[in-house]
Length: 213
Image 1 (spheres, rainbow, N blue to C red):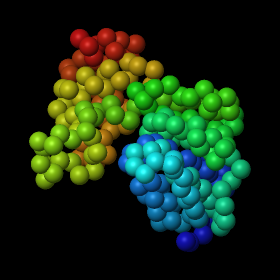
Image 2 (image 1 turned 30 degrees about the vertical axis):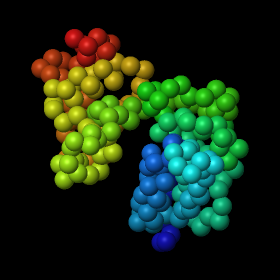
Image 3 (image 1 turned 90 degrees about the vertical axis):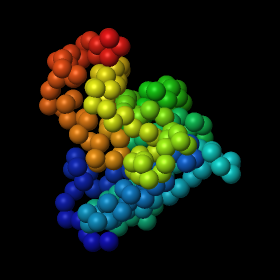
Image 4 (image 1 turned 135 degrees about the vertical axis):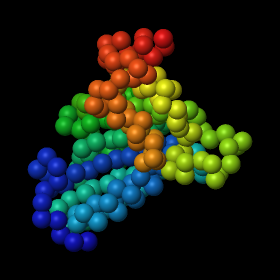
């Protein structure tokens, strides 16, 4: 891996991230993608894996360290724990040490952050991961008609997307992200630049109410 001459965002020489979720949720795939992206950018990195005792469907975590210098092992703390869900995540508490400078990032739709993690002093941040997702792809939808990068069936109608985003941003969330297919990213810009939602100006303080209306 080529030596990176610039520091990581924030001026750090190293950043440690943990991705956790149920087996099959894609945390290992996401970890490998981050590691590959870091390598292409010229950084050093490593990733370790851990999982529960279940053969399938159990909890899993990918733990990464990205640095501007060669690293031989994980740091003594993690800057962020990003959870797709909180299923048995406390099983990894000893392997993912957190402190008051750490971030806990998760989707509030997956339940509350486990108290055992909050006791570390880490700050909790709510990120809506499925604001524009319906549910798992129905078997009735042929694979050739699906968006290959979306594990869940996305909302593709603009009016429905406006309502879904309005509702999501009316909840206690810090941010919402679009589906994983770049062809659907156009559904989100209206949130960023303040354009109208379904023909009406977006008012954050009325978000949930306007969505239901």
